[in-house]
Image (tube, rainbow, N blue to C red; front, side, top):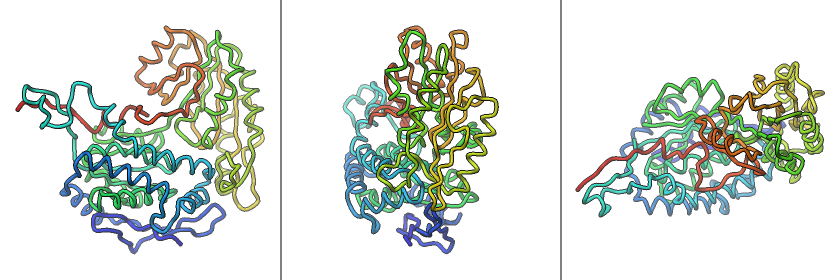
Length: 453
């Protein structure tokens, strides 16, 4: 049983109220301490009083922590033991967890590039800059304490708040109770690397206390579904991170057959659990051949335990898997099932099941299913035409546009609700450190002031 303590300004804290975390077959793995409301309030006040490290020290500490996270024993776990634990508990394939470990380390190492890319070209980062003598724009934080309600669908989501640390915020993370191992390991490494107990905190809580973390912070970021986005949409202090609803568009003048590998990677890469995985494929013309090809390729993916090196599909306990199967069948009513119509539960015989891929064909680019995002490889293939325009493509995190139509590309790039546009043969999960994911987080955290001295 691993003890996962609260990591507050006074050091590790083992609370009376704890939650047992189990692996997929139901074996107890860890005890997660839950911070009470009063503890959260006092912790955030202490963090607000704390001073931030100088910028160069923050950048160096992040790099050190990233290397330690990926290569050293932290809180009693080697990297391999940590990765096995995450996979065994969450059902994320072990190879995906391993790749995420390396990705987190690289993000920490390259954080300086990310925040520099985000800074306006006409702004400097300190009033001490010589240019302030004649007047200049200075990039300044909008607050001191940043809170995160983290997601548990993928370990790599935790690199999403590195910008806040690099920019001088003290950061409080409320982990997902599904996967607290990554933030516990990462925050332990960051504290040991130089941020200390008051610079970065892990505050696991129940739902009743969760909003206290946001209430006492200056700014916050919250991951969740459409209900979470709706809850916080009117609060300018909170940045909601909702479903990605990523998509691929294939126009008539392009040939889809050479990019089948890209389509499969877009749908199923990383286990198909990410917000950047494509859930919609829109085809100008007859979508049936595309749906058939996808179904054939995705059907060949094996059902294996998540800790198997060959695993590529997410795994969960069999009863929740059956509920997802029922939910999908209900939502897919009236569509043509190319794959998954006879079930998505790949029973592994140990009380768990792999979630098998599904491919359904829709009659319209405006069908409601096109906005449905599930935590496994599930694609909705729909027809598209020029009369439909970009309306079916809105509210999309990543859009791969396989087209040569420059006017259409202009429209897609200009559309405010499409965050990223990849033109041509590029899978939707493609990312590069230093480039924005859903905009730069610094756009939310920082502002410019005119300073003259």
